[in-house]
Image (cartoon, rainbow, N blue to C red; front, side):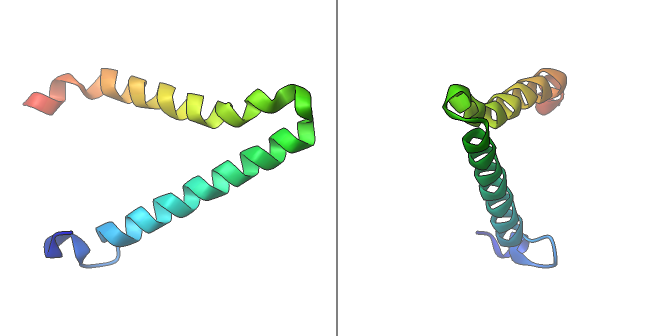
Length: 69
């Protein structure tokens, strides 16, 4: 990692650690919720991945043209 990105409160290492921790929390909560709902709703574990995928597609569609200017 560049030394320029590793300074201050919002450095790259801290942000990647926080993003990983948040992802584990969401995954654990989803698995717990799917277990609580029973075997019939095992596809509930894929719901967060679907939401992230749709949000990524939407963000790309809205910002794609501005990436090249």
